[in-house]
Image (tube, rainbow, N blue to C red):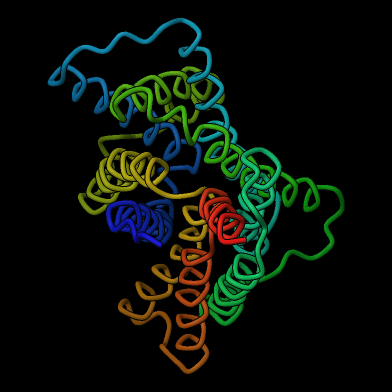
Length: 314
């Protein structure tokens, strides 16, 4: 088995920055001037501008009409449905519910890859995903940040949980369906069109929130936090995701989703709003053990090669 360092480093980097985004977003929104919808729109709009500017410094690349349509649907799955459903879902349910449901993404990636790409579901993969999910749940439920599970508040909580679940399913579907498509064009070309479509789709829902923001009243720390979210946790992260998507199998790429609660936990410990204990040590070993098992499991091509070699020996 060849270990693709570039693919693994890319997914680790992207998910690390997404993990950092969670506590930084909480600090920014604590003042009340910035809403979740505004942050989402700034992420999408800011990244769109940065990708278009970057595209002017590379060789022009023509995208045919059929592929532009494909990129539109890719933007719906990877950005609009993923981020939009998550934000609206969290507003209807609790952060605890949302955090737990996000651990389902690698499972969806494995199931969808099995049906669509005919990737085998092996014992190693199942055990790896179970270990990773267990580690993530230990971090979430054992957090000192008073994570609460939503009580039965009628249909609102149910719809919120379903929206968060759909966000995970949407992203898993994207990394499976578009694994080969992302090799057709440069990552800058792919991202500039995906974020352009996403911005157009999201703007009608966020225009009022954007207009209500008093930008002149923002503190320097809030501006710095927004800059990190747009540049690091969106512009750079989504480029890294495409690299990881090209180099890794969908199930392996999806496993790095478990890095996000780990990073959020480390930040909380560094900021002295949480403590590092034995439970968290166990969680770290479970997460990285899960990633190792899924990474070391055989792909469809490797299994076919192994079976062909066995048949030749017979």
